[in-house]
Image (tube, rainbow, N blue to C red; front, side):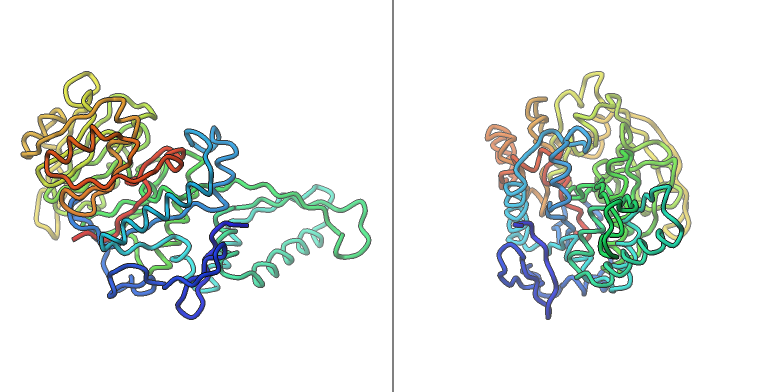
Length: 428
């Protein structure tokens, strides 16, 4: 199997497809390592600050099952998993060439203690017992799973966590000895967590575990929580039901933040974040999406910051009936003790003008080609996708933006671009 499964051996990761050693810290940042991240405080005050540490998740065996039935996985279309992995690795190399320290989910989970990994793997497995099985037989099947998890290597435990198998156990009608005692069927309902943006948001105050709306993606929140624990990072908050909140709806902008609210992030999720002061002592602009359609499911699908005074946005969002309203919340009190108060409501374009932000518009066709979904690695330094087209890239370059366009033709089959595929933990 050509799937990448990395195992930590004496500080070196090995790629099981290539069997070539790769240094654990492949970033130019020599002061960081996977295990050393706990000494850093996650913080993202502004989208345009230099990206320092990011989380990614290279698509693996778990993504194969989403590809087989894209209509059940919130995918746009099937794609070559091998091509998707190559695009993902090329994107990682591009980030590292910009001085960004990249941590893959599998690398992070491999840092967890053996007991925690085993516990998470056990929680990922569910049993469905045939009604004819006795309690002793059920206990025997459960003991066999426990013995298997105790014997598995680290990378295989991570695969179990991601694959989330359900095992249906029945008595075998053709049993010959204890090794043929049972008949087992396996059902897999894995998420495909390579869009690491949505299960978390990173504010200036730290990391928040969101709550994804779609059932297909719900396990990604738990997996992201495991990753944070493996890295020694305590989340500031975790969104609770009935609230939903997704990372693609959050954009930090220095002394204010843009918080999208619409199809996948609801009012209660935003309310919880305001009540728990996860954004910090800054103005919060809640951008209310009037469209509520999947083609522009998140704020980052139609809008992107490029610098403190420059942004790009889908043209219909700036003046038509598709333009969002913005509710402006201002902290009242001191930085140590404050509450948010709704002070006014305005239009999105007007709010951006008030903040001194020049907006470069793009067409609906460019939006559908993921023009908005690049990742800033620094002020006016953007990694975008070739699919968005050279005319769009040239308009950005005319405004002084350094655009590096990369191929993402397979990966967008999962319904997102580079921004969706990257959770920035540290900027600045």
